[in-house]
Length: 507
Ligand code: 0RQ
Image (cartoon, rainbow, N blue to C red; front, side):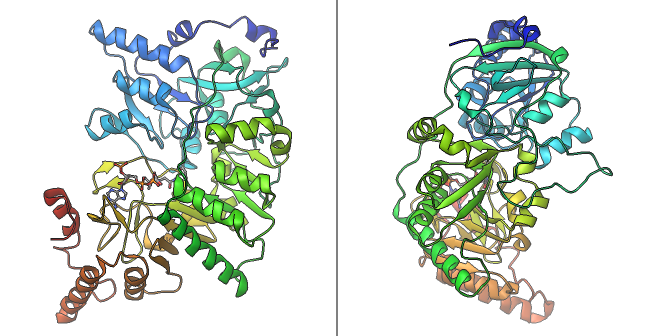
């Protein structure tokens, strides 16, 4: 095919991934493209990992800070973590090697709300961004960039970095052109203006990313599809959870708290999220919209069936089959999908204005409605908070979902006190497990505890949870006070510590 690098000056800067990687130095902060396995650079990070390995063998320290949109792929996070090349990583990641290094204390990790990352960089909170490594689908004659399958923080990386390395990926369809909407109106306070969006489909920006050609130090040509985000067929638990949510939504429409076409849907990562979307695809609601950060197979199917009329996101995160469907019908999807920078897809102002229905998976919730999305047994990071906080706090209704137990029933995902808090009781309206749905709106803490235990906890754990609450209340009545949110402080985390000692939460 003809070259995708039409700008004559930039064509002069084409070089190998190896030569481009050599422009990155020890101690650099590097902003890389990539969001949930979409649009990450395919070649430079691996070449960089080789340089780091060589430096290590020669006894020279070579570590960088890696800033991304969200999770990437083995070719980026995996390759750099394997050689010990990451000093500090932010934000969301889901790579097993990264996770192991972080939990072993060999790599620092800062878990920031996804909507905060770009502005933290403009504010100077994270220090100087030295290099941007950004994948694009093509470069126009005037230097404008056709974005790839995600936008993430790319606008900010291109604006803020001293040096820019572009990977031009010819496996990305040129039909992506026109699908993106890059908003260039964000200013630093006190100069901020309202973001002019009132519908998830509004286009308020530019279809292209901009970069100062003088900052571009290298262009690397690649040809590789994104990582395959595998989905398994919805299991029983996921289907039950989806069923509870559908019943709840139908009820809210019936009593007039939601319009018949609902409100824009945000759906988190994973199989439960896809099961809920599959349920909605079979369900009674029409003319749905999406205002989400990752567009997964479930939403693509809803667009295809016509149940959903349009969806806004910052990234596509599709399986091989989903990718094929998308590529085969690009013209159809370009009219129905808008990809935006993540500070817009996740913006609190917009999530609140549009009235998003936010649905995210969690690790555990406690009887009062606090949610842990990120830490196994309070200390080991799983992935990160991602966008769940951006959406949950500002949603019209925020849902958190999980199977009621984990590890073959040894763990209750409903506990007396969460071992780490990502979403406080103030930001959580609905908890759902396969057992049922707890609607916490308008309930005081002790009422919440009852509903959470009776609707969401697994029957095997209900007696112990009821007993905990009863004894906590008795102890509070004993003259100390503490009846607002009763706890037995010596016992509140004993389920977790027993699991660590004995491999089970209950005796
Ligand atoms: O462990 O892999 O060792 O078996 O945790 O659990 O059930 O596979 O759950 O893949 O849906 O992920 C919250 C992590 C859920 C994800 C989380 C163990 C369990 C298993 C994973 P194994 P599942 P999922 C927008 C929204 C935060 C970011 C977010 C996530 C592993 O959804 O990262 O919401 N969310 N972003 O066995 C101990 C418990 C457990 C437990 C499960 N209570 N205690 N271990 N596990 N429950 C998207 C973005 O932001 C990009």
